[in-house]
Image (cartoon, rainbow, N blue to C red):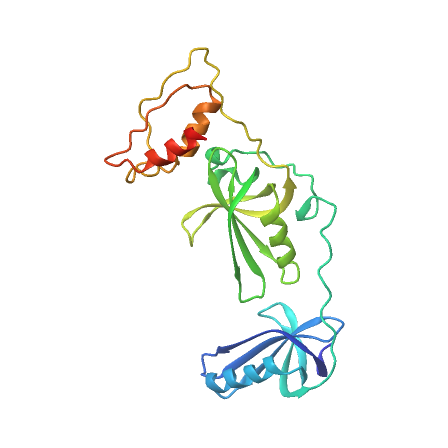
Length: 280
């Protein structure tokens, strides 16, 4: 509805920003028991805005009176409030997020991906629309001025890693990010393109589907005559290795090796650990 409105509810999020003219712009999300809407108001300066936003945050509930309209910058209906009053109204808590859907589809309209499957190491900007399969090893999110969330995640497919990006609606971002972070693996369809800001090849995802993940294989030594490894460093060797003596010895034992040599540079700190393990 466009026009003058009065809303009453509890504050979910709040922020204050300084405008180019020096005013303080108050921004807060109000939940009235039926839904959430963004409300904006203005203070004479940033300092006053900070004082007002603290009062709003500490209020049990607030009543906001102002004009509802389409914020063309954010692409959503907001209320510009000229009157804000603290109240003692009992507003219910927002409902818990719904349980995850049974469908493996996380983002997009269909879980059936038809774009050609490409290995990350073979990917180029000329490929255009592609699909990838892999595991998420890093994530990062950033809220844009439009209210949407830019979610970036690094996908490893066994050959190399690439950053994928997705633009998420405000009301769905939290659920989608949670599913991506907890998934064993992902199938991603999108467009390969150069990210001019990061100056690297990325994939802008339009479809993300949960996947079983990469198949793990354990390396084996099937040789009938086992070798004796005479050159091996542990994490105690200065700037030379990351594996502990315990892990190295257990792997050698698993492969049927009768002995190994620890050849750390200039130190013997790994010897007590090895000795303790072999005495068990």
